[in-house]
Amino acid sequence: MDCKEVSETLFLFFDNEMEEELLAPFRDHVGTCGDCARKVDYTRKLLWIVRERTYRCSAPDRLRHRILISFEHRRFAGPH
Ligand SMILES: [Zn+2]
View 1: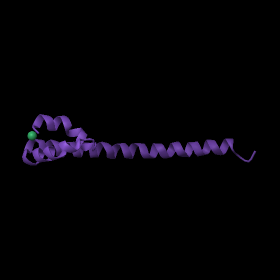
View 2: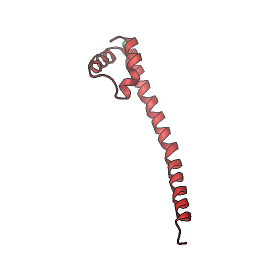
View 3: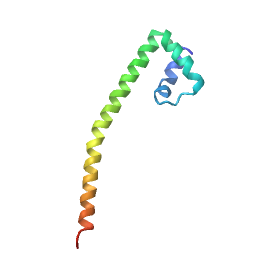
View 4: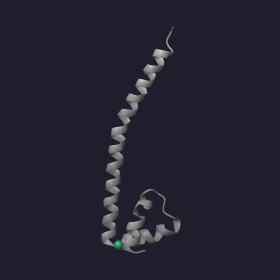
């Protein structure tokens, strides 16, 4: 595998969607190429930050949404 192929398959690697037979050559190249090692490192950090932010932003929203739904239910399915 060369630098171009690593760039093209980088996101497959992080999404765990890379084909089995590409995993070894990918790791081999990243292990010997400083440029690609940095690229992998950078992408890993970037994805981590994106996931962390997505989690932090959506969790309270989902909670709020659930609380609203439970209020709605209580209003319509009340004692009357
Ligand atoms: Zn490379």
